Image 1 (tube, rainbow, N blue to C red):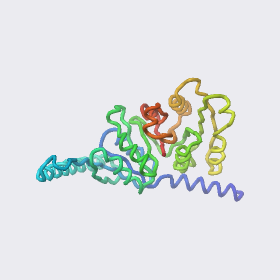
Image 2 (image 1 turned 135 degrees about the vertical axis):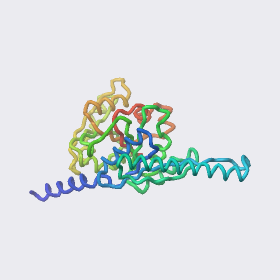
Image 3 (image 1 turned 90 degrees about the vertical axis):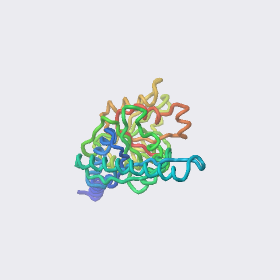
Image 4 (image 1 turned 45 degrees about the vertical axis):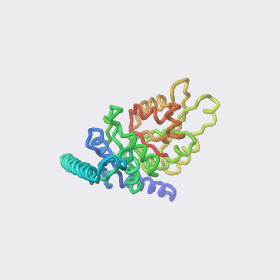
Length: 288
């Protein structure tokens, strides 16, 4: 085997073996969280999996309650957290999961920051995404995406995984967020059988610039089996086009930058990230 081919094969083998060694799953015992845990165990079959339980502690402003009442509320919250912890441990045992349950405390509306702090010491965090929007851990997910420096994976409740994703789609735009997402996902991309870089353009002139070609060349140097596809919007929302392309490709994972401008700007302007999170049909790998 030529030296270059041998080196390429060694790089591909290394990425396929290493992938992700240390993953955190936001775990509250819901069916979506249990599915996310199963997804994590497939994604990191030999790695460490942490199932993180977040206990919300009572918050009072000074003068609202007496010291005795404050202490009683704290004790009650701690008892409930311990009961939940015991129930989650029993659930993991019944599932035969190898995940380690860890408990963290947070004040109301501060759980995203707490989870972000825990995620800094792993390769990424995974969130189950229930069908019911009111049950989705949006605050926790955004805390990780914006404040951990690690990728966040969204796993829709009915999506499953057997081994590493074989077909991956990249939603490419020449932004810092998209570049970060591709870099963070590189171990998975190198291990995949097929990767497609999809560029959605507003008109023919943008497509003629072939903006995905540079990224494809970069990925090919890492032995990623990659091709580029340019798609015109034709008046359709970009989010709809990306989800349609992922479905047509049979993609098992969609890699994209999360929130191209500020979160508030995306919400007001109807950003792609928000729209895809509203109705994901495929697991998402997002970085910011």
